[in-house]
Image (cartoon, rainbow, N blue to C red; front, side, top):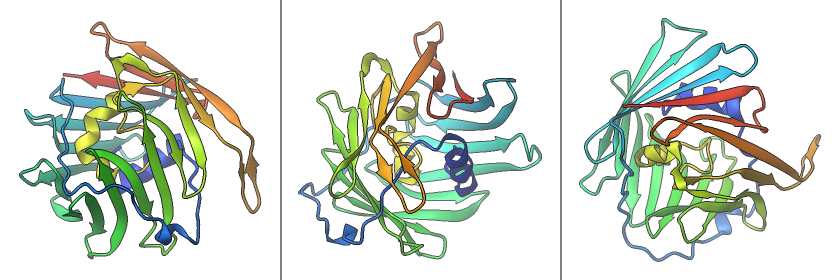
Length: 263
């Protein structure tokens, strides 16, 4: 996954989990949250998480992402290996401030990205100090994201939560684009373990959800040369002997299976 630039591109290509919408008015949309601080509390039940993507039809693995956690549940390092370039291994290391907020990522011992926190807002910069993303938190939950600063093509997302702190919908500045239905509040979302580095992950809308959902409802979209109808995607889960998510397969990505291993 993961949190190296090449990892993000790989997983976006593999999974394509969300359609984002552009708007010329994105910069005029203001947050309604008045929080003056953010404390990222991490969920913890493992010191190690391994995520493997493979083809469903032939079991060929595509890439592996390994995450290592400290005693507070924060990701302190990650390793990425691709089947197409098995000799190339990318290692990310993460640093935090005294409130548990991510402030930097080093990729193969070189500074890759930094995060500047101002009250409840996080700004992500690349190693040339160019702004990439801006994120807003309310009640310590991610509620707004603006991305595309580097490309001068800003995209806006707003996240809406239920009472169980699960994301139920994602919208742009004017309308809902996707909904997540039928949460199982007895099962933990394995991606939620990566919450401490979530400000760097833009390929999964539900990373900040505590639990797993059964259905993704994607609203119609009309583009310049393509369109999508209203679509419902089912998600299926396999659990290990401790009741944790072991595999995820979904109608949206169709040909991929994602496997999770814990220690």
